[in-house]
Image (cartoon, rainbow over all chains, first blue to last red; front, side):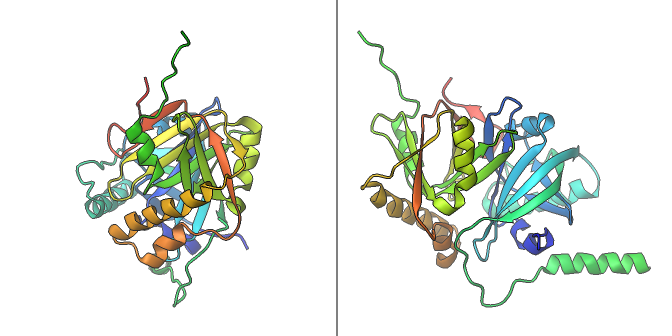
Length: 159
Length: 162
């Protein structure tokens, strides 16, 4: 069964920095760390766009990117194959990410550095687990945020 | 007189990438689709012109296909406690055979990363698992031709070897 974003939601809490690889049209790879991979819905994530850097320049011309996320409990690694769609600079998603980034910045001592310019929206094409050692958990992981969001959506649709 | 070639890495940079850093590699396929592979350790050559990366073989299948196709590589080295990060790029990545003393470098390097991770609050079990590997190791060597400051902030991406 294919991996889903909901199944690896624990990796998107910002506790462990993710990394993103992109590529120029000429084929030069680039890799950088990301402070935030934000869950949008089961098929989309938003990445924080803080500076006009090589990553952002690359995806504007070659939309394919790969993001590596790490489970903060088990150390499991996952690779997300992504396709860049657009950048949002206002609205609920942007404000949500801005608030979350402020929390991450405070937690990591980067409050004077992190500043959100936009939310880059990507379609998730595929998720694969990296073959690597994984720490066994005493209790099975639960995606509490996913369950909460689904409950709220059920409530709002039945209202 | 023969022209002296100045190595890309200075002594401080060579020391920085050799201990206590998280190492991740980007390569790309024939369709310019990138992938990421974690490395466990690296060795800088005595003349500081080449970098050899050590990684788990089971993670490296796509990386090996990619470098066999085009040799292009980008590698980030980041120190968790300071966020200081360097990115090196090259165009001649290729597989090499591990040498005897490489096997001593790897546990020393991974132990220094475990120290870094536990110092910022990660558990010892988690930190050891990050640097663990199930199977045999392989080595990739490349000649860095560009170096970037990738430390988070407005200067991230600044090329250091102009």
